[in-house]
Length: 200
Image (cartoon, rainbow, N blue to C red):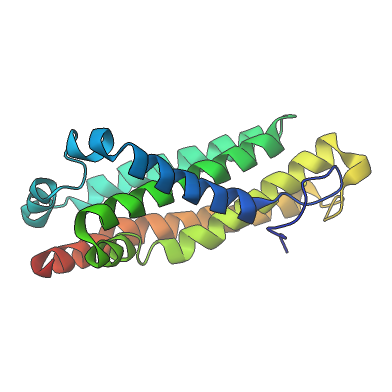
């Protein structure tokens, strides 16, 4: 299993949880400090934007291909970076970025709508993130293991001798999970959001 906390030493595990929480705090801080620029002057997630979301028609097929491109792009970047010496740094950077995005998104909704903003945020990530989160953790584990097995053989602490076919099977399971998440995000989540916006 991927241990998501601890010290970032040569033989230790990546401190994903502390980095992610740091990103969340940074996102909240940035949004609160710069809310006059990031919120008031941009119309980000304001009532006008929600009004258009409420009455727009979602083309689920087009949305699926768009979401698929975005999610698979991220997966490809991480997978390819794992074959380079900077693979571990990229994993940490991606974790920090996701934390900042989550913190900024949630903070923006709370600033604008209070407790209702939390409900909006939860609905916005369901049910696809029930698959995305474990898939991303598994991908980070896969990338870390691969990178360490190539460049840090003397400090490998987990599955250092995993065969190439086994690594590909693991990656295939991750891809399937992401594909299923894309389907939920495109064909299920829009209906949930539409129902929420009718009473928001």
